[in-house]
Length: 94
Image 1 (cartoon, rainbow, N blue to C red):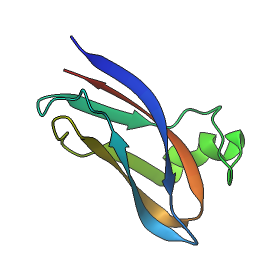
Image 2 (cartoon, rainbow, N blue to C red):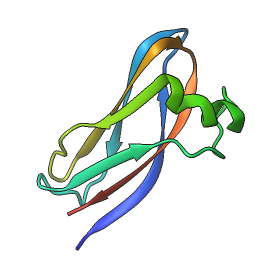
Image 3 (spheres, one colour):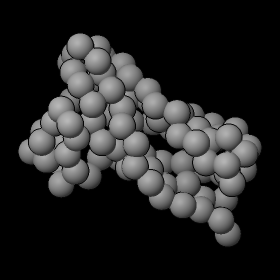
Image 4 (cartoon, rainbow, N blue to C red):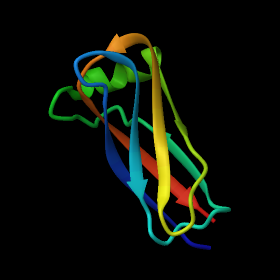
């Protein structure tokens, strides 16, 4: 069973309710499954670890269907306008 983990940055820019990031995973299959989340101790160039701990209160993450040998997209949607870059984690498996 192939699989892997990683992190990416989703950027809401100057203020938006939605953001997305494409994750390149050349070994992924079209039948693979992907999941994303925010770790409470992560930080980004725009947000502290404390900010990341509150991210799930305002926003959710979903992953698009993988494209074989390409990767998948992580979608972020928030009830409030968020700004800047946030670190997100992901895992995928066949």
